[in-house]
Figure: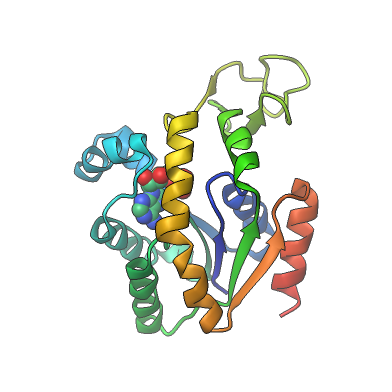
Length: 216
Ligand code: AMP
């Protein structure tokens, strides 16, 4: 089974993908995570992507399409995957359709996490992660039980994404509405688009997703 979670930055695609991975035995494919790893490693792709990501603009389609088409050929994807952050443009969605058709696969569910833009600015600018185990926290909504100490691993180092500043978040939201939202119409026409309320609390969103996916 292959899933695609859609929604603007901060909608919860990453958080929910990680939860669904275990439930359905799928692998999360986050193009944002892959690009951040490329930036960290200093690879050619990372060098091309870094400044674009810091501005909150989209990395060129050809780079993204090459990256994801190589990734879905890897053995851990054989059982199916959850796409998080890809496709983000109509050409990417079209390229994905070709890739899946070549493998004899398809998207089983495209689910939009419906959210409110202003709430996304607040969600994103407050979020941070444990540098040791990757557990996510938020300045207001999800603080560790003991300030400065990770609940999960006891780590005391935390990181924030370089593109989680207010100006960049607003640019990322614009990019979503201008370049990514048109894909929703593309999937609606194909009759595969469903939506869930992404403003509900995290567990309630997971339950809604499980209902949509499991109930098909
Ligand atoms: P994300 O972690 O999904 O919020 O992505 C972080 C940044 O990586 C985005 O703001 C873009 O600059 C870049 N990026 C991630 N996925 C894509 C994609 N599918 N197409 C173009 N740029 C992307």
